[in-house]
Length: 252
Ligand code: 13P
Image (cartoon, rainbow, N blue to C red; front, side, top):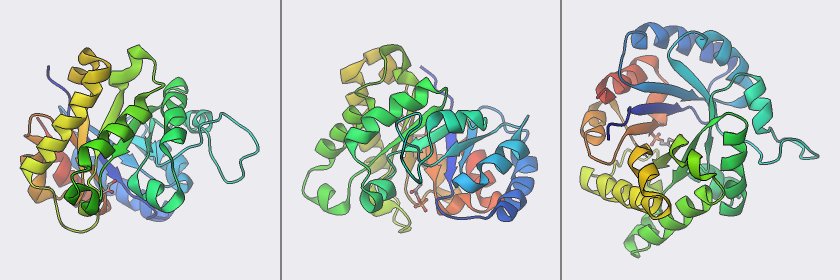
């Protein structure tokens, strides 16, 4: 099965509205004619509205970086899936390791967030990944299986393939230490196998991104691997030229 590659830039907590507008006016001309690949930017809540407006009619999708599982309620400081849909946001990144490790995001919450996002018409990038200590202790597969199974546990059967899974080894995030092609392929193939355990047809269709120190120079090699269908890019997505070079390198 051929899967359309999908490259997403995760800005994390970077860029004011002014910075974001500068970025997007630089990026759009660079990617406007790039065919055969989907492109998204995952931006802070404060820049979502401006980025949705500035990308309207373009090929760049706009994603949030988190949301609450409930549609509304007394949850001070939180934002819900219907609120994101209301802004015409396309999707949301869920379960990033920084949210899990720094802000107490749990598999139980993610089990509710993923279907809540889909129900509101949002696309989902569900993140998973192991620490260096877990990898060294031979616990990578257990961790990935637990995270992926929990995140997909309440997704309706027909919607599984709508979830994009990002494999991001925590030891490769922001460290410049990219996984070797063998390590990245092995982990992404394992993740696809976990999805196959739930639904074999969905496993063929589901797209799996690699994330962790992706740069223009290493994108083509990673995305050529059989079980890697895209990239989730942190630092190198903050500059339009570098992000556009990654998009170009990721085309099938
Ligand atoms: P870097 O590309 O900066 O390593 O970050 C990866 C990441 O966490 C994307 O979500």
